[in-house]
Length: 204
Image 1 (tube, rainbow, N blue to C red):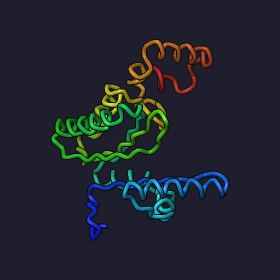
Image 2 (cartoon, helix red, strand yellow; image 1 turned 60 degrees about the vertical axis):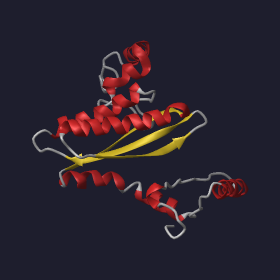
Image 3 (cartoon, rainbow, N blue to C red; image 1 turned 30 degrees about the vertical axis):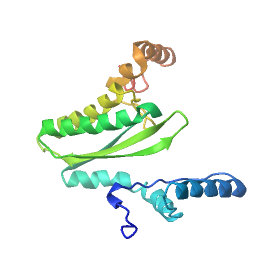
Image 4 (cartoon, rainbow, N blue to C red; image 1 turned 120 degrees about the vertical axis):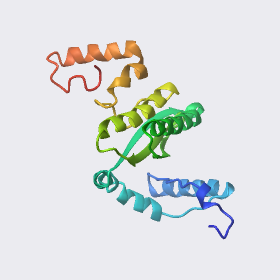
């Protein structure tokens, strides 16, 4: 690639999955290949996708390994309209860097677009840093909270496909509005009057 004059530090890869009957799949493959060629990209074949499909189930276990190396590694994901994606992307990077600076740490953050739709897309952020043994949770909360707040402040959703639980609950009312939160409280009250099913995990 470098011999072709391409800067591999300024490139990205897109995984495209095709579903349907053989005729439809072949037609879509040809259409994608034509778009790639028109825009100066190359088609790498099925190898990268097959490798990703295998390794995506191994990746979560890296978190335990990283913790043994005094390193926190985690993810946060959001969705936003196309018109706001660039703003959300930049805001999250800036928020993470400010959080790292406040802790006096050199952290790391990256992102990819995991899902796309006619109306918008999901941005999936991965971050990590070496943690302080004396205050690991507070440090994690500082970084994670900065990222989540950046989603809300810049037009993104609280979560895309990971869902909302105790860790994301503090932002629910900002995300769906006070009225939306009241509707959910009424729903939980009606369907779980004994407050037995994970109380206060989604709405406080």
